[in-house]
Length: 201
Image 1 (spheres, helix red, strand yellow):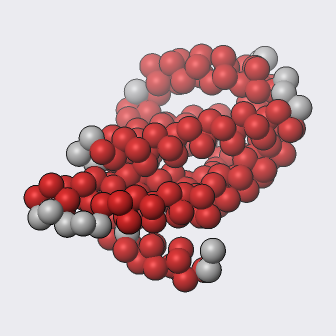
Image 2 (spheres, one colour):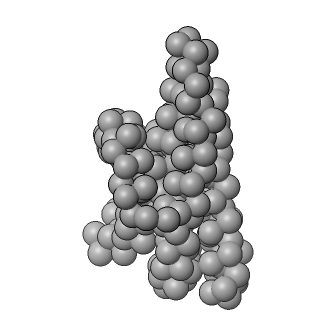
């Protein structure tokens, strides 16, 4: 698939990507402020949930961890795209909720482990996973836009737009998720070990 295809598609969804990126950033700030204003309650809820999630993940070998992370993120990306048929609302909610959670987790990591641990934990997400999530949600919103224009203006482009979304998903989003899982499967165990040591104190 020529690079021009990806570039052209990204140009089409540029405004949606920008809007979702701004929403994601705002939701991170909102999550951080929420945690900062309710530190004890938030930490209790999230630390208990994190502990339940981390324990099984720590026992996985790198290959299994890679598979787990990749499939989990792939499922989220697919949902973000296909759920766009519901008025484009769910992809937007996915971005907001993920940003909110990231903001809360950022507060906990910064408070308990410091800036270095926070950056180490976020770096694998920031490079590949977050763009893949935003692109997926933007594709979901674009899908709804295409459906809307088919219904209201009787445009005949819905089928071709859906094919473009599938191609973009295969040639852009899946590779991003693959590299994200590859990095996290090796970086995450060290990060998780640090978090686990906190639970044991």
